[in-house]
Image (tube, rainbow, N blue to C red; front, side, top):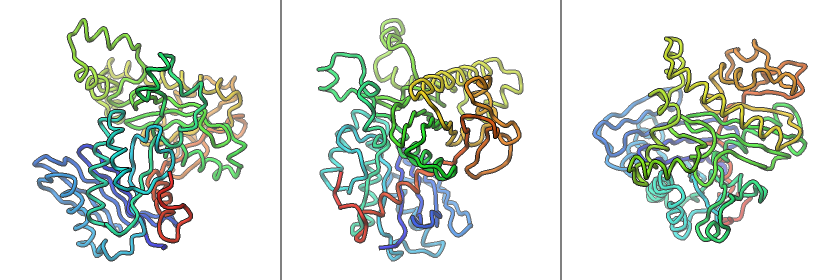
Length: 405
């Protein structure tokens, strides 16, 4: 079946969607449903090069999808007769159970729901999006693609936390890693861009968006990653703290009388760049710095300091590094982040070409000098395309056995 694939990424109050041709890689249509459950809901839809918008209350995810699908029809496409081959769903946490694309059944939905204890901000919303879409498209394969899957095979020394082993085993405590679909896609694109065999490359991939993560990849296999049991660990992010002393949690409980939910909210939604200077949009951060805002400057310096620590750690982890790649919103667009993250590393064979770094180019490209021993690249991520291709393999003529985990 060679039809397009609908990709759905359902968040707590939003739904991103794309209709994709998995063969050519083109997005036939795309959109974003925002502010679900609020009176000022909005849907931005793009199809055939034309943008349209819906504004008004969106009661729930099912209503959001219904309205989005109606916008397809208004633009000239009835999705129920468009020959959709499959529907691919991004699911954040697969735990120990799911480590490859999986045909969704009632049992799979139940297990994703059970894993909500590990991703309370994400998995419940993923389930709502799945159930809503399955009601609209009951006769095509629905496939879950898990953020954690690429990191399932981390070496034991990288995935294991040094806590009581029995407690860890009983409660599923290990490093799972996230943004795996992006890290896998981008590392594969690096090999294509360079005309190299992925099996020969040692890579550092830096996925820098509002959420941010780093990975060390050897021969196409993840060796380490910055996010852990949850997406909170690792780099400084837009609203997440990243690495902190675990004792801070106990200190805030005892000293500030904050309960677990309040601390969770603080570290996930009120920390990172936003906690340090009040904004989490990098464009606004740079504007504040240009205006002389000292808090914004400190926030940026903390961000870069943490990023450089992980780059250094992964240089040692891999021993030999062939490529360092920047991706996602900040990684692809913030030229100063790329320059500052790798400044002064010439003795390690890392040299950025300043003109290449600032060039206005949206394609995958090399930004290091010709003499740099380590090739530095900017590669736009495309998680939706990766999900679409994985989901399409479950269509009737697909190569993957349906129901495989």
